[in-house]
Structure formats: structure tokens, C-alpha cells
Image (cartoon, rainbow, N blue to C red; front, side):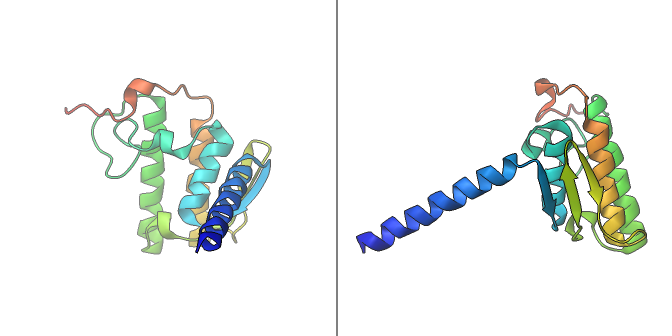
Length: 147
């Protein structure tokens, strides 16, 4: 029984180390929609994707209201891009599997041009490019004033 617990702890420790190392590698590929977005945000901003969840009025689920700042404007544009993908593909962009490669501060989509996956990936890359260099205002995290 104790050996089983020790082996589970060891396995969990190895998994944590692997995940941490994967977050700091210079080049990375991913095939999952939301993982791709996380990778893009980290590549272009060196911030966690969680920093942008519920930022302003458009970063996160169910955006609406007044655009708070340049970061929120990027989120607004990303939402509109995803709407365009949905309208042409009839699938939510965040659930489309994409192939993306990120290295040395930029990302490229590896899916065939014109496909829904390529369109969804392009939304994410444009979002990352938009966020790059934009000031992050901690006061806008979790803050969307009612109009």
C-alpha cells in the first residue's frame, strides 16, 4: 500500500516537472484549439493565458460592453474572428483542432490554407500579434463596468 502511494507521488512529481519544462521550451507544437491559444498568448506576451481570462469586457467568455483598453480591443477582434470562423465552418473555433508551431517569439499555422483549422489558428496568431507590446493593466482584470 505504501509503495503504491509512493509510486503515485513519484509519477505526479515527474508529470509536474515535464509540464513545467514544456512551458519553458523555445519551440513548441500543439494540436488542440485551446492549447494552441494558450501557447500563442505565452509566445507573444510571455504571460499566462489565465492573465487574460476575464480581463476587461471582451477577454473571456461572453464578451460585451465598452472596450476598456488596447488589450480588450485585441480580445474584441479575436471574438469577431472566431465568429467569422463559426459562420463559415459552422463549428466553434475554440473546439477546432489546429496544428501550430511557435518558436523564437512567433507562431505559424501548419494546417492547410483555407481549412477551418487554418482559419481558427489564424485568429489565434493574429490575437497574439495584437497583444504583443500592449500594456497589461491589472486594474482591468475581472473588471467590466456596467454601462
